[in-house]
Length: 474
Image (cartoon, rainbow, N blue to C red; front, side, top):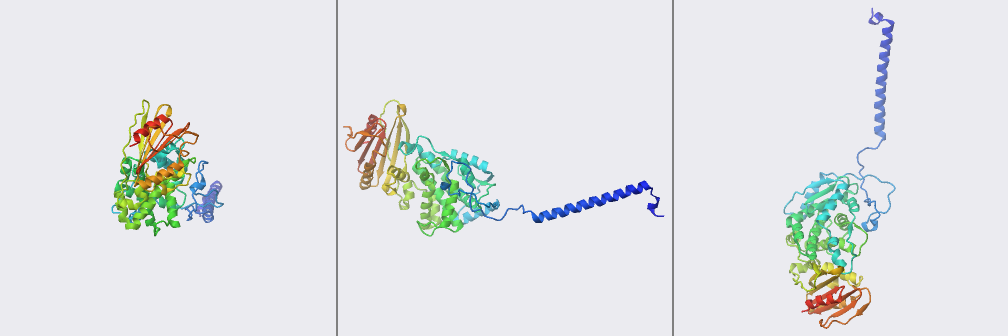
């Protein structure tokens, strides 16, 4: 007798229903497995596509001029994701830069991963601690009639989108975008630049030297060394070091441009001189450190990092760094201007900035050659009642011939370079023997030369200008 013969009719129905249920569940499971297998063959892989993007997306703001940033103005029809940067490669990049630079010491630089928002915050903190050159000189250029009364404003949002890696000297920390979706070459170049900056700062203590510098000229010279040493180091690591002075091949120029996106701030608006001043330290440094490398290789670069130039004159003329040709120390004057007048600034602009000033005054007619032979300068600015201003700029030159040539150039530029309105008085006061005098409703100018020294005094009040000029004369 079989076991199923003992079952009742009701038990047999239940058993059949259970069997059909099991068959249904197994069939559904098999269908799910087959569907998932088919989808795996038809859908794209979630892994990043090995495609290198040929452009960096510009910042979504109307304040950024795409032509200035050298980014495309149109969106490609097909946009494929760029491969993600392998963070572990940072160690290899650091080693490659150190080896190419023939670094004598390796320094551990903290690496912090950030997103685009955190990069903007890091940039903001960095520029508050270490204002870029345009923010250091805008007040001086405003006094000289070359800048508006408003300071330049950095477009942090626009720059954060273009910066893949940032080195902050004030904290000796390196920031790396973990959400970077641009070219891998850009993030690798900017990261290599950061490691190179960290090396020069630590090896020569450039960050501390720049913070202790007593003038714009000295700070600019030290900043040029730090920037230029890092760019040349990245060129060496990539095997694109130019073979001779004055020749920068396309690969080296592309690396320089990628570095400029990270180290030269983006600005709101288009203030006069802004584009030339913004990357002045980078441009000066690349030329100077390249000349040092062509002279004696990385050994000469080490010597520059340990003993930075004393002035931008030495940066512009490497032979004067080798002598060395030190700038003259000029003594400030102390005129008695009466109550309400305060000395607000005493600074040295240096040959590099002076060249830009003269170029702007002459609307491009005069270039860097007009200030060759610079020996030192000292600018003093006083503020008085009702926002009145007077300033005196004493300029020392290598010899009387060079001073006379510069004096002649200023005679051609004055008074229009500083006083735009009508000039009603060109007769010097009796107390001022020699020199030239211009005075009108919009200001007064006094220009004087004695041997290798030139004085330029200007202000709102003729009596105050005369008082300052009288003290300045020998």
